[in-house]
Amino acid sequence: MDKRKIKETVIGGLIKNNPTFVLVLGTCPTIAMTTSLAQAFAMGIATTFVLIFSNLFISLLRNLIPDKVRIPCYIVIISTFVTIVDMVMQRYMPDLYSTMRAFIALIVVNCIILARAESYASCNKPLYSMLDGVSIGLGFTGALCLIGIVREFLAGGAFAGISIPGYPAMSGVGASAFGFIVFGCLMALFNFVIQKINERKDKMKAAVLPLSEGKVEPLKEVAEK
Image (cartoon, rainbow, N blue to C red; front, side, top):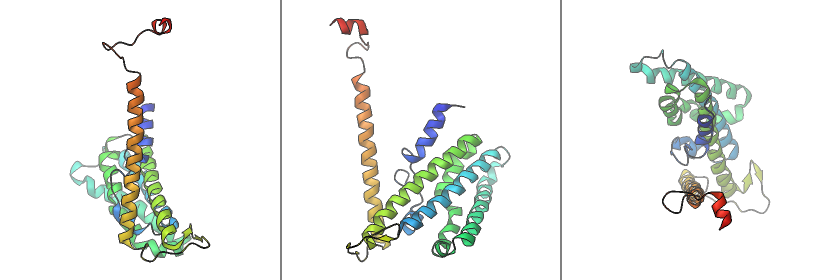
């Protein structure tokens, strides 16, 4: 097992390859399912489940799936796990399911899942593919929840369905148009923070680079100076 690859895979979906704020994938559920934290979290977890197990099975079968029919095969595998999610939510969370039904079905063609199946699971081992599913799924869930918190708070003065006394509700904030505004602002903030962190890391690396002729002075000579 390559520990470095595991670390890069786990961190990648959360930051470097965040599907929402960096790759800008899955925009439809991002806007439609973030009017509240509950919907955002449920959509994120459902997508994460499908990502993990579709990545696993696609990786296991990658050498058996003919190249010419790989996309239809991927969709069959993905749709199997989407059906499982659909049945579980319909049975145990009927109220939430009634508001999300159409978008649960659309997970089958979610570009995040198809992109990871094509670019990662189809050419990596099962363990790495599962970790990629976990990482990408958590990155997607975190982004949805963040957008959902902001939109729910601004629209109704609430957090996770609990109203905040004295906060005036803002009309029109729950609309999709405003959802795009919140999404864009949070995406800009996310990338700004990541850029500043990377710049700080680069400065720290530059501080320890050799100052002359590409050589670092021995510690003994530096101490004598």
